[in-house]
Image (cartoon, rainbow over all chains, first blue to last red; front, side, top):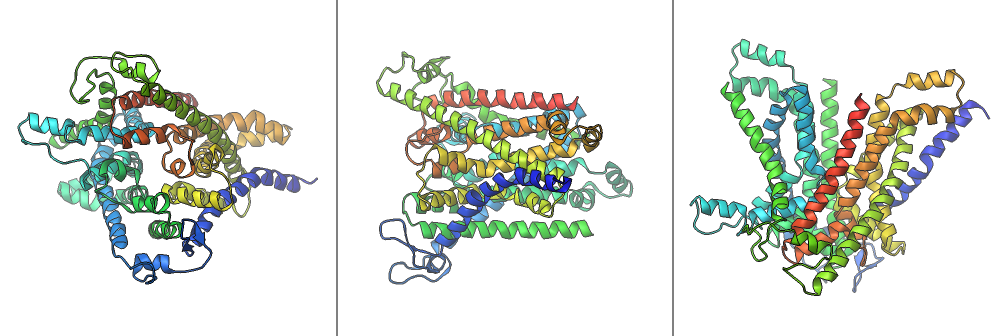
Length: 294
Length: 272
């Protein structure tokens, strides 16, 4: 056997099994979900193999008038989820940017330890971290007790089961997602440029806007994208911290699958989330490519 | 400098924000108050005793024995799933990483992009897609479906971790080994494998921890009777907040910290 042949055989040995596994169990399911989104729901759950575009119609503006009415509530929930995810990204940026800046100016040993401390909570069970916020935000929770103890408010305020709680919870659990890309670009900042800018008479705000912000833009965009994606489809955080009051598209999909048992409609909703994610990724990819060229 | 002071102050607040909730759970797992969890009523280990099925002064009702059994059943399921999933994903992820890093072939770049997809896919989408798939092909939901489902995205995590390590390893040592007459299998066993071992170990630990904690994908494909630990706690939370959740959470915390510390230890050893 020639060397080239042996190499090819080795390559197939390494690639073969994992590739087949991913084709069958990763791409297979996504393909079937796509097919399901064009089928008709069965009367008692399950599906009828009759192709139809009405699942999408029910979301976007046309529906099978014999069974369903078009209800703008679905698109409203989707838009709301986009809004909550965007606000989460904004909050994460505000929380992480100064922190990343602070840590990037530390001594090397301290710096590594600080980064370790920021990423450590990622390894702590998600459900535990969310539970902690329930303890804090409840009417009898820490925040309210503190506020009442200080005499700032007479009666407990409602923090839990609000948009605020959901955004706070998502910001908290996605901190490492935003922090690491931001830190990556802030660490590379050229101090000489910043000094030059202030030597040339720029104010702090001008230096930040004209020098620091553009230089850290790739980190900002990268962190925003990988925070936005899990925030958009999330249903755990809104379930725990939003209760029945804050419904996101993820909760709606869960309901369609586990309570309403309308799998085709649930699949169509999931396709909506996936299209949004893909559009975002393509946009980011284009942007990064443009940046690399200039 | 005022600005620098402000920044340091902010940094302090940042770490309080990150760690206060977690510390709170730990502290209150030792609270003796049974009625209002938030009012400190003295130190107790009763919640921990309860978790281990011991009798406590607080509660001696029969339901607690049940909940203890359920809890440890869930722990066992989680451990079996996490062990199988992490080992399987580590083998697959490492094989793919090796192929992409050490062989020249046309699809290598394609593979690199492809392996990002399972990590980026929103977990609810992957979860329901897997559910539909298993039902459609007539596979009963079981521990096996959980293991398969989690592996689909954990392979990517291992791939990325091992690839990062492979990029650091000097290929000239491998070439030297071949030049000195080692057959490929020898080079692999004596040179390549020891070089990337920290990456493989790191990928395995990462996969293990993520598998132990996965809620969304497992939730959709667990079926009935396969309760993992996160799903068990999810169920407890839905029925109302009870103090023993603090104790479970604290034990989980301890467990993850030990694993994360082990991971860190191996990482620091690699840097020497």
